[in-house]
Image (tube, rainbow, N blue to C red):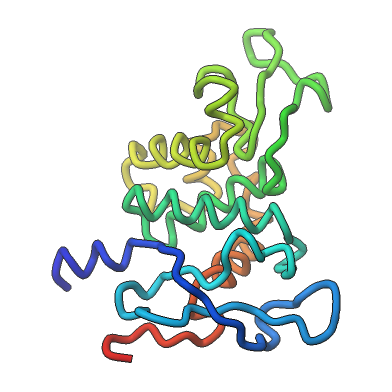
Length: 210
């Protein structure tokens, strides 16, 4: 595979979409006859194009996640793709945010909910999708979903051999959670969500010339 083709495979882009009725892959919430979205054109550019746009994900529920949660997952995937991460790396980002915040952009964290302190006795300052503390960046950066995701992927890129690690251990190396296996319970949900936000989840043809 040429370098150009590899770069294209990494790109996760939003295209003009049309509605087609989805099957059992994604359980849609709200009312019967809700329509899903698939990429309508130019899918040959990338086999990982997005089939669900942030403005309409509120209609769907995937593995118990919906609305802003799916929009946040999509943002994480796009940021990961822009940083050069394939579907596996993007899934780790979504999995991390599930384990940290339930894919919610929280303006509070462990100190406010549980009184948890850092090892040095200071109050934890975790906020945002990834529950990042002060040393990750400013409040504005950590509360911006795209910027918070960028901070996560920037750190993941420095972890040598993360691709060969169990997913939860790779995330733990970035997030430094007290339990290295903390994120494992969200593996299936992260797979379901990332698959549902990829074009091929609705059978969109991604092969060249189609």
